[in-house]
Amino acid sequence: MKTGREPLLKRLPALFEIPALDADRARRRIQFMECNVMLPVKVFIVALIFYSFEYSPWIGSIGSTSDVVVESVQASFGFYLFISAALAIPLLAARRLPLAVLQWTAVTNALVDGLFLAAMTLVTGGMDSILFWVFIGLILRNAVSVPPGFSQIFLNFAMSLCYVLVAVLEFSVTNNLDDATQRILDFNAQEELGEPLVLRLVVLWLTTICCSGLELLLERQRLAAEEAGEFVARENQLRAAGRLAAEFAHQIKNPLTIINNAAYSLQRSVREKKPVAPEQIEIIQEEVSRVDQVITQIMGYAQLSEGRVEKLEVVEKIDAAIGQVFPPAVPTGISVQKKLNGTFPPLLMQRGHLTEIIVNLLQNAREALGDQGKVTVTASCLRDNVVVISVTDDGPGIPPARLEQVFEAYFTTKAKGTGLGLAIVRHNVELYGGTVRVDSTLGQGATFTVTFPAKSQNRPMNT
Image (cartoon, rainbow, N blue to C red; front, side, top):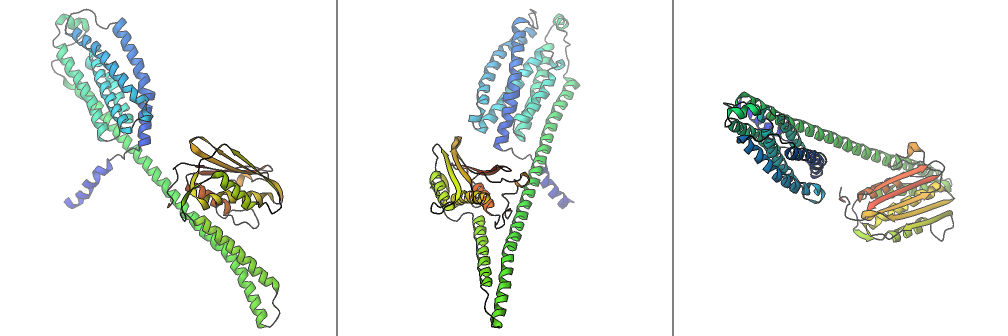
């Protein structure tokens, strides 16, 4: 039995382990709770307390121990205002400070609030004060602001100790008041702290446990959802790879079948000593050329990290791509216009990738137009050195139902197209953390826009 229990005991801590929050989520939680919720609430409560102390005193001139308590709370109120204002500064500048500073600020803020709440609870009825429920609110607040785990449980346990402090001070004060003052203040001397304190502490501790347990369940559910999404993404990648392999085999198999038939026909002609038909040789040459085109584009699609990263000039590469797709020496009915707005930072990319992106977009526009039309190449630099390049044609456009498919490998509407040009564009753009999109209206042409950062935000090249 002992050996059977040991694995369970070893797994038990892992069951209650709450995964650590990533830095962005932890920062957002602190900003939401401490800045968006707690700061306005504290401003309202502080104003209410200040008015009550200055213009509507809760206790008159009695000259007893309770006066000492009220005076002490009023004196601590100024100190609380100073500390709260000092702690609000880093919270308002949360985006500029390290996460560790924000977390310690949130913890300190919670402790200060807990101590001042204990003082206010003492002068508003002690253990009978309605402010007891505010302690539960602070525990809920800590569950959002403070990182889950030991630090959160420790802080919420400190909240319960603040309430114990209320009970101890109330017991000490009320038992030192004379009978007349007790009747005026409607206080009852307590001989012992008793069952009410235990019940309230149980409520606070159960709230702490429930918050931690709920957070554990939510984090586990979030991780499970992310893991399921990752499985779906990986399965889709595998399906895409399988589809790519099948399509590649299909694209190669058809020309090979035609070549085999033509070769068989030639072989029979030679065996029967008949003249060789030139059409058979032309068929073989055409199909070999087609296979070579498919293999070349497959190699471009699959290439990830061959070559080296260079500083590339955007305008220079656009001009070179236009010259490659629309050679000046070759007459054509398609006019090409350039709209280059402003100056451009150098792009840190592989030379072949940038050229391939622009050439494929221009080639796609040329094939869409046919013999005549207009192609417009637009480039601009946005904030944060984000470079945007668009290629627009005034061709027939793309049906809305096919807009989501144009970037898939081997999807094509052209009779002689391979369906890899736009897939290569998306592949190469996404290597550098960029995006590509298409906007089109039937009868009015299409616009393909690629966006990528010029700074070091690119993905690892080996993934």
